[in-house]
Structures are given as structure tokens and as C-alpha cells.
Image 1 (cartoon, rainbow, N blue to C red):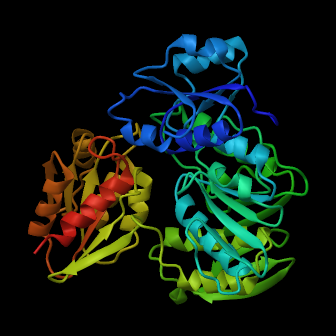
Image 2 (cartoon, rainbow, N blue to C red; image 1 turned 135 degrees about the vertical axis):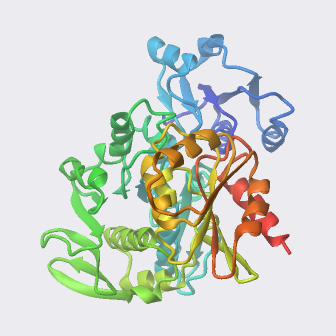
Amino acid sequence: MNNWDGKHVLILGAARQGVALARWLTRHGAAVTLSDLRTEAELSGARQTLSGHAVRWSLGGHPLELLDQTDLLCLSGGVPVRVPIVQEAVRRGIPVSNDTQIFLETVPCRTVGITGSAGKTTTTALVGAMAERAFSRAGVARGDSGSDASTGRSVYVGGNIGDPLINHVDEMTADDLAILEISSFQLELMSLSPNVAAILNVTPNHLDRHTSMQEYAAAKARLLDFQRTQDAAVLGRDDPGAWNLRSNVKGRLHSFGLTRLEEHVDGAYYDDGILYLHDKGVDIPLVRRDQIQLRGKHNLLNVLAAFAIGHAAGLSLDSMFTAAEEFRGVPHRLEFVRELGGVKWYDDSIATAPERTMAAIRSFEEPIVLLLGGRDKNLPWEELARLVHQRVDHVVIFGEASAKIKKALEAGQTSREKPHSVDVFGHLREAVHKAQEIAEPGDVVLLSPGGTSYDEFKDFEERGAQFRLWVQGLS
């Protein structure tokens, strides 16, 4: 839609994306109804945020009669497409969209979209830092956007990370660059692709939301489906789920990986301690591995991905390797919290799938006390259990998925002596105190749960923030 005046838009879900879209649509003349399953008391913050906007509220459910006057139905990321009101809208022929689709329909500048089962937030943040370096002579980060008055160009970073970029689309110009993290939930509904589309990896995740791995992979693949021949795609070479999508690429193919790339494929790779860019048959050294501050092989892949994406987007080499050297990571992603009594504590609350926990474990050589738990997403735990028996000295399980995790650990038990102990608690705070009791000088205590936070916290960020507070309070 190019003209929103008088259009009736129903938004399901008053979370960050739904609230941002409601604000933007009302400013552009739409009649907006915001529907949420929660109560008025639970949504007091969201209602206050939109108090100056003519938004109609429908709380406590999604009655089908809301569709009677609806021209467009929009979903926040947390709302599944299988809920009855969405299915009824499809039956009636009412179009279904979301904030990311409307942003891409409206944005005047080039766009970079990044998705993947793991690593997309770190990669998106680093590409944003690289772009800010490229666009600003000072190279100073400025929150969700960075600009330099002398160039008149701005960088906007958001989407599934930070601020929904629909909040800023009206101020963007043709010379700017918008960098979005995009989730599988958002991709389900999209019929537009960014100019540079990056799929880092496709491994089991969110199978509590998607009915199968095939459906989940198909959602990720949609990032490529609507590109044009002048666009660019970046695929992870070492991940079969991403690399198998190369036949879907319509424009230029770029890649990244831990081994040399094929001669005809541009991108980034790692060899003998050095990160390289392969560009039109020429290998260009970028930085040494020891100049990168992020731990773990998975973060090395994230940095390689950022170089490949930045190159595909036309960013200068100087800006990219300077940003990569300075980048210290994103909160709650293998973030160092403190050292106490010779024990180092790390916050990896973002690890909401077993595979992410496995990547975190492999980032350490030290003995590990692992905090594992939360809510299960209908994902397999067996491979993680095998790694735990090889690498983890003590496991402290917490939360709703405790029984499932403990069963997986017991089923994977071998003659190996690790882990030395497995303890189970109902809540993370109890697990923190048990970890302090167990840990010895030289150990790492690692919160890398493998499950979501929704059994006890609002999101993984709140879980990580509480973990940090409790750890800082230890004596």
C-alpha cells in the first residue's frame, strides 16, 4: 500500500515490533487496532507508549469479528501464522504482512538482511560497526544509527535486533544503508528481499514454532527468493543448510568459511591464523586471528561472515578490519562477567538452542561448570549430552526443561568420568549459588542454557541481566 489514509489495519501482538508498526501506521493515516492476548494491566507500558496515537485496543484474545473491517492483518514476530484468526484472514483473502515487509516496501535506500540459526545478532552488529566506520570519518558508534554530517550518509541497524527500523524509515534517504537482522518468524510472511541477503547457517531451531525442519529451512530460504540479478547473496560455506541454497541465488554469490573458497566465489576465509578476502581471484590478507577479541570458532565464522557481507555491500577494507579489531561483541553472547576467586564467569544467555550451547562449550579449554536449562523448543539434546560428557566437569540444570535435559544426559552416559556432578534446581538463581559452591580456581562458570528463557524471564536479555546481577553480588 502506498496510501494508508483510512485503511483499517489489525496488528496482532503488542510487543516491540507491533507497537512500532502501530505508531508508524497511525502517523500515516491508518486506522489501527492492536490486539493482544494479555490484559490491560500487563500491557500498561505498551499502552502508555502509544497514548498519543489513535490506536484501538482489543485485549485478552483475538476474536474473529476483528477481521470484519480489516484491510490488512499484520503479525508481531511472536504470533504464529497458525492461530485461528490468521487462518481465517487467509480464507477471507485479507493480506497478511509484518513490520519488516512494510519497511522493505517503504525504505528508500539499499538494505542488508542477515539471518541464520546462530550468530546473526553478532554478525549484524559487526556489519553495522563496519558500515559506521565506512560512512563516518570519526567512526564513532551512535546507537542504532551512525552518520557523518560531512558525507550526509547514515547507517541504520535494527530489525530483530534492537529497534524496529520502521521507526526510522521516514528519515532515511537514498544514500543511507539499512542493516537488518531478520528471523524465520518474520521471513514466513515476506515477499521482498534485501539487496544483500546473508544466510549464515540453517540448523535445528524453533521447532516448537515451525512444524518441521523443512518448514523452518524454507522460511530462511525466503530471504533469497525475491532478489534480483543485481543483488548479492552471502552463504555460509561450512554449513550444509546454508550452502545447499546456492542454487537459489539470483545475483552475485559470496561466501565465507574456514577453508579456501572456490576460485569463482568471492568472500572471506581463514587460513593458518589469518583472515583473508578472496576478490576476483585475488587473496587479500585482512587481520590475524589473534587481533579478533571474540572467543570461539563460531565467532571466527561470524567475523568472516561480516567481512563477506561488508564486501558484498561495498564497504572499504580499512573500515572493515578496523571495526573487526575494535569489536568486543554483543551483550549476553559469551560475555565475560567477572572473575572471583580464580573462577571466570561468562554470560551466554543468548544460547536458546542446544547447538549454540555446544559452540560455547567448544570456545573454552578450561574446566567448565555449565548452567543448562530453561524452556525446551522441541529440539534434540542428545548431541549436546555427548559433548557434555567429553568436555564439561559439572552441570547445574535449572528450569522447566530440567527433566528432559537430565534424561538426555543420563542416556548419553558412557564410561567417561565427566561430568563429575549433575545437580537440578527449579530456578536460575539457585543454580548460580550451586555453581559458586562447586567451582574451583581455574574453572569457567558458563551460563549457556540451551533453552529459552520464557519459563522464568521475559526474554534472554532479562535472564542474562539477572544472571549478571546475581554473579556480581557473589562474595
